[in-house]
Image (cartoon, rainbow, N blue to C red; front, side, top):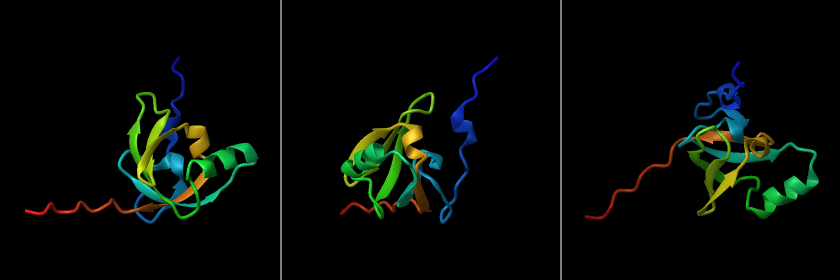
Length: 103
């Protein structure tokens, strides 16, 4: 009997869709819209790490079993657990355009 994998239940979000931070796949970006959790300590911890409304977050890496997930925000990378990410509402943004290097 196999253990259910939570990563299989993630939504397939497209640009412009709304969902949870935990629904983003590697390489996707989203803007934080709101928090929905009853744990004030966790909410304060997220705010202290720079996760605030309006910040843009990109999923950089996902661990082999789907948890934790490395995200990039405000110029640094941070590892988060999926259960923490489920409490953050986002809107999916298009991928960041690569800048051409000066020749």
